[in-house]
Image 1 (tube, rainbow, N blue to C red):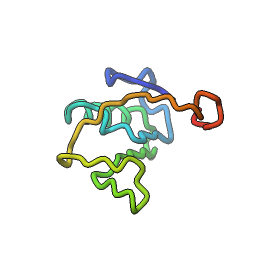
Image 2 (cartoon, helix red, strand yellow):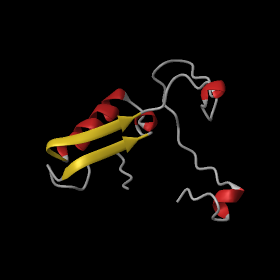
Image 3 (cartoon, helix red, strand yellow):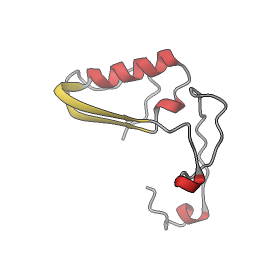
Length: 97
């Protein structure tokens, strides 16, 4: 696990077989920064390596299992990240690491 501000990952090129970017893209503020993050991720992959980029869906229908139920105003929207401590997590019962 690594948190990076998009300036460049601290890894040599062609270092990894697999790269995961889960629930990240919508937190990157501009399209240019998103593309830079994708290029930087791909730089770190070995030839034949695989990358998974997983983004949130515009549709947040609670009846179909979505958790937030948030209504987005448009397709491409910046979602700021805010840590919210929960009692369960703070007591170590949540397992959210």
